[in-house]
Picture 1 (cartoon, one colour):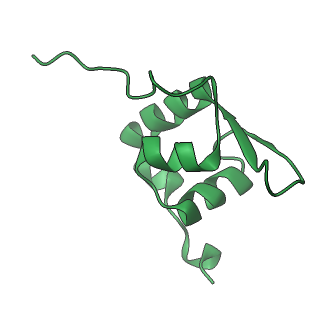
Picture 2 (tube, helix red, strand yellow):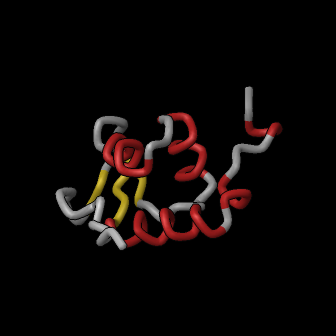
Length: 81
């Protein structure tokens, strides 16, 4: 059996939206939806330049739950413009 490596090992303790997208292989649109709806815990700065701050452990929990329950994190038709 192949040993599973931590895909978040080279990321800092606090990730931004772009790093979340890269680590989880999701689009910016989907990441913003998940962050704005509170499905991934985060701190959002009103200053657009700073954006979202997401704890690495929260990303780990999200990735684990995404594998187990993907429909919970699906974009709903009402969320699309």
